[in-house]
Image (cartoon, rainbow over all chains, first blue to last red; front, side, top):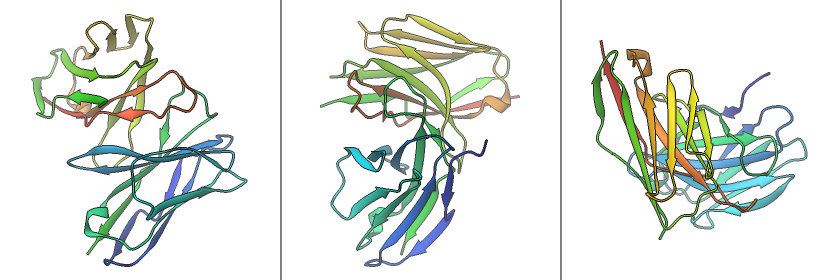
Length: 114
Length: 113
């Protein structure tokens, strides 16, 4: 069974640009969560999608958005990039939207904003 | 506000010893607590989950305790090996299905041969 796949692995953008990151969950998993990881803040929750609906959202500005498709694949978009958006963006999937489930993480997309 | 605290300083221990990592939380009533391992440049990997009504959980050389009175979890690795060197993250989840899994900032463990 293939794991969680995130593309691209590395990305370099300049301030003001926008970026779209992609995540393919494990086959059969319907919940996809996104996290931002920086050295100082650790993993910060961005949002979770389940069956194409956003179930939960973290404390990030509206420049951060996401969506989930009918095949459970998810995309995350950041508009008007700022230097502080440089981070490792991690996607994680789980089987259902319930509690008591472990998350399966991808290797992440390392975004550098210059 | 809710807070999850892990020791930000790296833990350095000798191979063969037991490593003990701490996770403290405040203003939280977690239903579950999970521990993950993260290697540099990779996503976290799930290790163990413990429920609020469980005191202890074991898996091979790993042991987790959960004290809801002290609001603390301890993560132990016995007979540690250099391959155990990584960052270890604890994560808490509330009781509602809409609650998100919230992570601590992690503690880096270095096991020297």
